[in-house]
Image 1 (tube, helix red, strand yellow):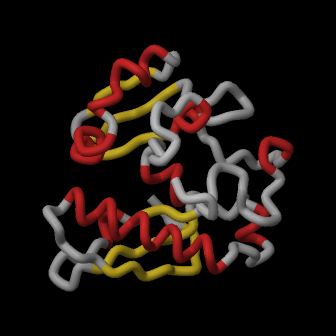
Image 2 (cartoon, helix red, strand yellow):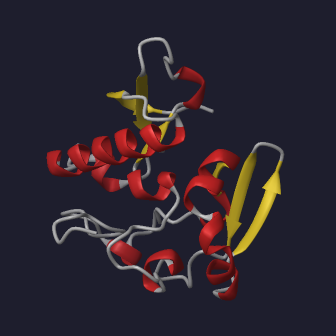
Amino acid sequence: MSKNQYMEGKLAGCKKNKCKNTCCDDYRVEEWVDEYFAFHERMKDHITSLGIKIKFKKDRVNFENCSDGKDCKFLKYSINKDIDPRPIDCKIYPFAVDWKDIDFDKKIVHLYYWDDECPLIRNNAIPNEFRQEVEANIKRDFATLFHGARFNVKFIDKVHKD
């Protein structure tokens, strides 16, 4: 993880765990099975030893008990500090991938806001550097998931409705 990489609660203006609108929705942390096997299966024993529960539900994987109420267990107990081990949804919060709206022909990923509760969204105060980092994360992870395909990212300034 580079020195300048943003992490949970490190965005300028973020109130971290003092914010009443927590960004760590412990019960909503999920990823697709493909993502899990690409990024998390190799550390399954370590993850479960931290008390993180892994539940497979059809084509998705849910992680529960990822936080101790203040800190992300994926980050706090990371084996390799050079890699951000969190699921992609956590890395890119307050953005969310619209999986139904991915244009595979043109290779475009649309990113929406996760919710409108984050004060940084309400105040239109998400740093441009973080957007760039999110874009780089999406491009890298999608290239891994989709066999080297090069995707572009389009930010949509509205809340994702699932």
